[in-house]
Length: 205
Image 1 (cartoon, rainbow, N blue to C red):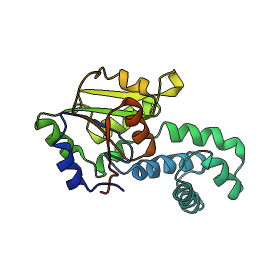
Image 2: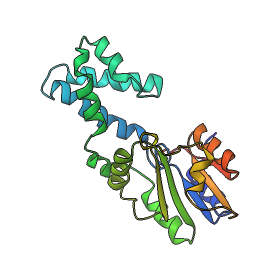
Image 3: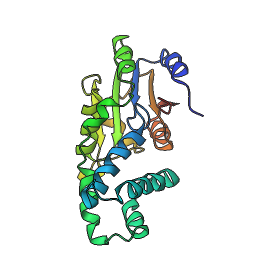
């Protein structure tokens, strides 16, 4: 069960070093998905197409049902009789979405700044494509808060959470009072594999 943010803040007083996950932990990942899905559908249909809203909402619904974006456009295109030849266009737009709109969404930016000011050393470790994760981090305005940011991109051969190899990239061996904060079983398993403590927190807005 996820801690409330107040409960998390109390727990963090026990630690000197804190590793945060990004998606679903420091902001609501669904807000990113909505922006990226919109750009993907728009790239195929255009915003003026009468079907845009229905197909966009259909995409959102499928994502909510499965909690995954894997093969989502294949399913949406099939359901809405869209030629599968447009899939590369949708995927390209999705992966290259303009995420400046994320500047307006709620996040834990101010809380992170407060935690850093308290003297704790904080890190960010996130799985995902480097270009996409960097855009999210910049849009949220949190890139300068962390002592180190590690983006675990399997497409360029990097280890990803939950591998303990990721922990070695932080160079925090033999350091006590360290904790991982994340919203998923991947984060929990990463902490276990790295032999550090774990706090389950899911962004609640």
